[in-house]
Image 1: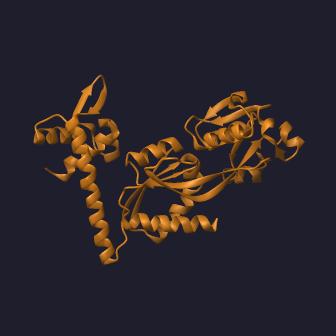
Image 2: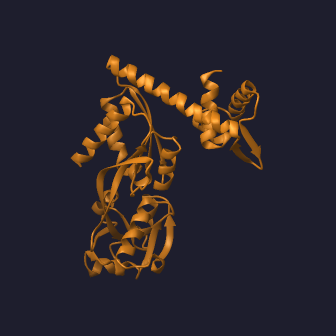
Image 3: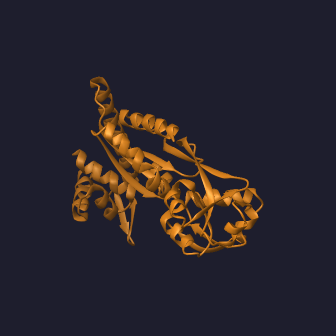
Length: 299
């Protein structure tokens, strides 16, 4: 049995989709189906049930998936151990980041890291915080960087940076004319542009309002948007106010298309690294974590 067949099977087992597995492996769907069928013929049993346009693992498939994870984990451990003995730092990492971090923090960090370690291959997947945590749990990515607290005993969470959140409004908004401090109760008086469900930013804001005695259902949410850029555009157009990371609006503040108003009491949230507790830590992961912590401490 070839490693290739097992690797293709593992990808389908994680995605529970032949199409998504093909995309992640840069293969055609018929090629993925062929590799899985050959593995099923090798074991003389079905590994997947395919019914009603839904793919699920059979009991045998679940057992094979369990061993596949162990096998490829041992491969990674072997490669890391050999590289440590030879003094070589190389390999590949797949990093996942929530939208704000991927757009405004990681490009500079990963660019500097890549300059120092050109032999290391980096891949980046972008989702909201909820999606990134799920990808870490499912072993789709090696390391997640998220913008909201994570409570999961199976994951190691390390805070790397504290991010300030501020109210943003168009320059001619009534709140701007009133001053540069905003009370939580002021927010519900105006149309509010919000991030989408599952966003770490949204979760942090709602928790803050609840702590300050504001019922989130009292917010006049006029729009729900999936990225900081879309949100900023809506606020610039005068559709409402919002709360957003100060680190994402430096250009708009210089151009005076947005005004930042400080919350009273202030609001901040952690940017955190998230990884599996039980996963073997390869040298390349250690190198990236050490570099990232040092990078964040300089900011």
